[in-house]
Each structure stands twice: as C-alpha cells, then as structure tokens.
Length: 160
Image (cartoon, rainbow, N blue to C red; front, side, top):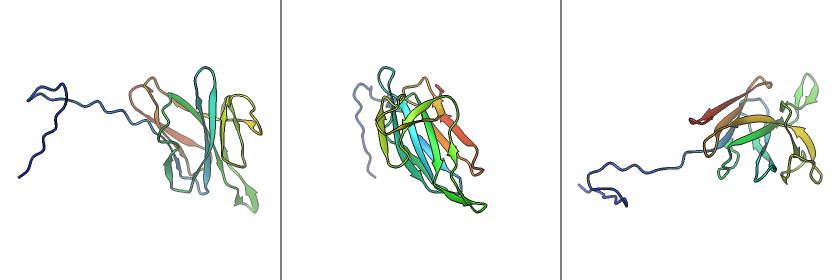
C-alpha cells in the first residue's frame, strides 16, 4: 500500500490545514428556448467605462460560460434568437429590459470599450441586469426559458 505526503508551507505536523481556493465565478448562459439564442454581455471597466461583447451562440438545450476568465461584480446581458418561423412569419425574440443601454453590433462579433456610448458602427440597445455581488466576482447562471418571454437568473455565493 502506498501513501502520498503533501507538504504545505506553514502547516504544523498533525494539524488540519485548509487551502484557500478561489471561488468559482463563472457567468453561464443556458438556452431552453426552441431556437438558437445569441448572447451579448456588458460589464464595468476601470472608472465609469463599460465593455460590451457579443455574441455567444447557444443551441436549444445548451449551456455555456461566456468567458471563463471574466471576473466582475456585476453584468448586463442581451439575448436575441435567430429568426424562426411562427404562424407563417419570420420572427426574432429579444430578451432585454430596463434602462441600461450599451453598444452592440448585430451583424458580427464585437468588443466595444466605453460601451455606454455609441461607438463606431454600433447602436445603443437595452440590456437586462444579470446580477450583482459584494464578493470578488459574481457567479451566475442566466437561463432563457422555453416560453420565449422569461429568463431565470440564479446567483451563487454569499455576497449577492
């Protein structure tokens, strides 16, 4: 029988030592809607500046982290379905509500700094608040529900 010894600096022999692991802080989007949903996100930068980015594409039933390196205390999002046929017409569903507007470009992927203002070829569009935390970074899941109207947001951790 073999055994492994793990040496931890600063731990006394026989003592219980806890390793401080950083908390997970992913912003995950899930799609329960019957059509592909594209997601844009906006989050604060230094000072009063915001960065907007898009698009994360989610097929029906898919969940994905927007950016695994992203560590922010708050964020806004906008969801847009790809056009789909409903009652003989082509329609597109948009998930966005509130007063917050950020720059976006609907044709291609984008990254806009100072996104709280119209930038380059962008338009200012409404985004929904995704959540906020007092922790170092938010960990949240936003789900685009099957009804095509609602989203559900769950925030993990003690500081929301």
